[in-house]
Length: 82
Image 1 (cartoon, rainbow, N blue to C red):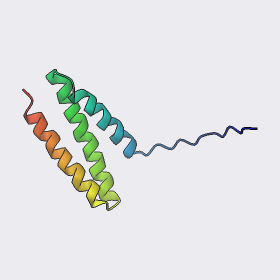
Image 2: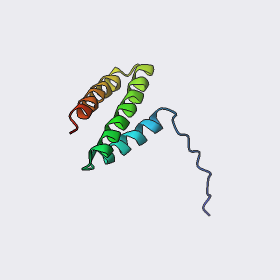
Image 3: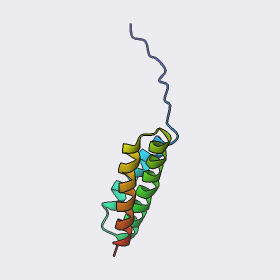
Image 4: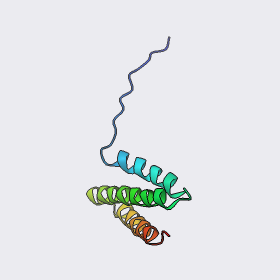
């Protein structure tokens, strides 16, 4: 009747950590304490660096530019932590 097929799960070596770090950063930046927020902004900066790398590697300058802007705003977020 139904055939169960083995799912081939291929995780991209750059996109997967970029997505996971971006999601973790969003959760951490939403916390009220400064320490988790700092870790969240750093997580975002690492994720954004990976997206910039991916965008430049694939010559997708829209992605590279967008995440370059996000990288800068995360840096500003770190400077504005009180």
